[in-house]
Length: 101
Picture 1 (cartoon, rainbow, N blue to C red):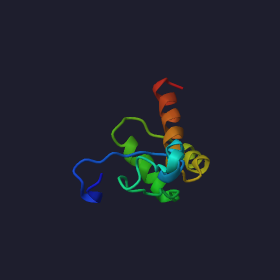
Picture 2: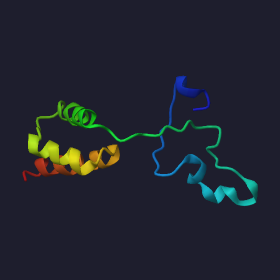
Picture 3: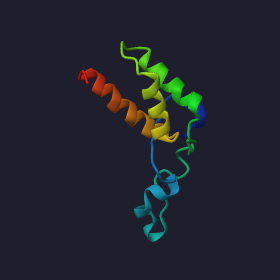
């Protein structure tokens, strides 16, 4: 963490807000976020279609389940390129397959 990108141990935090704003209760009395100067912020950009498809293919490769082309198109479109949303949608679809539906 404090050793930069080459640190042997990394902690990943995912948030919808900047790290500076994440702990806004720390602003009282001139304090800063407890993450200030410790964590490196990485902005995750929306995935393009090939990246989203590769994500789906890679995750399903370790299973016996395969989504149809229509399902993959729907997942990519509904996610809008947002990685977290794509993961959630894939999880739901995968769960339906496991349940036999």
